Amino acid sequence: MDPNTTETEWGSKAWRLLSEVRSQSPLIQCITNFVSMDIVANTLLSAGASPAMLHAAEELPDFTPRAAALVVNVGTLSPSWLPAMKAAARLCMTLATPWVLDPVAASASAFRLDACRELLKLRPTVVRGNASEIIALSQASAAAQPHTNAASKSLHIVKGVDSVHKSMDAVEAAKLLARTSGAIVAVSGATDIVTDGNRVVGAHNGVAMMQKITATGCSVTALIAAFVAVDKSHALDAAVSALAVFGVAGELGMKMAKGPASLRMHLIDELYGLDESALNSHVNVTSL
Ligand SMILES: Nc1ncnc2c1ncn2[C@@H]1O[C@H](COP(=O)(O)OP(=O)(O)O)[C@@H](O)[C@H]1O
Ligand SMILES: Cc1ncsc1CCOP(=O)(O)O
Ligand SMILES: [Mg+2]
Image 1: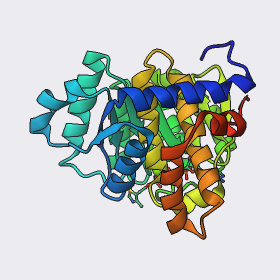
Image 2: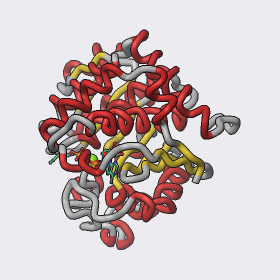
Image 3: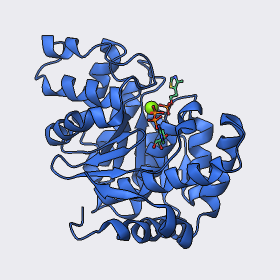
């Protein structure tokens, strides 16, 4: 993070990065779960990025090098998808292309937890999960070997895809995961937390109703990828900005929404229409 960024400057930083996404329209390859594909693509389009949901291993050598960033989301993981996820992540690591891991339901099973740990070794630029996912992954990755006792203890910390912890409960776990993985770690929730293992920044935007729309977490993970794509050397700032922008769109959308279904529509509309004054007046980011 730029240590000189003051709390009042986050609005203009978020605006600058959103403007870059709109002008550059970065190509974002998304290997993501079936539930999320539609809302993730629509979120990226509304922000100005160009989404592509390609996951066939045969296509990766041609396509992944052309992407400005990659998302790997394990939400509907199956054995047939994992090799392509790893191959795409490995290509990004080799090419220094930013990539973002969403460890959906990280410790729901040993298969999923091991997959997330293997993906972590491929040096994601950012890991974004909810609090339960980050706590589980942090504990598991602190264990040295697959299926050690420490790793199996972190099994079933998550219930399913929804968090049973508050984001603030995951601050230390996030810092540890950032240190052990080398990634920027983002924990979504009432306060979105972003850390590089030393600094901790909180983004306080958003509304609780966003949890009642499936795949909002997946969507903000993809938005983080778009923001990191346009500011590769400041991944922490980019992640904070994406989380704040998505939260502001949720706050503005909530003014017109009657419930989760209409919030989904209004959030996407508000993301599309965000302007400088809205971000300057609504972005609420502090150091923690
Ligand atoms: N209680 C809350 N108040 C405000 N925003 C929230 C709240 N819970 C989640 N959000 C927002 O909803 C989005 C999805 O986060 P979350 O529900 O934690 O992810 P996931 O869907 O992966 O569990 C994020 O943008 C987050 O900031
Ligand atoms: C319901 C569900 N089941 C497998 S993936 C998925 C979507 C999860 O999306 P999010 O993590 O954004 O809530
Ligand atoms: Mg999630």
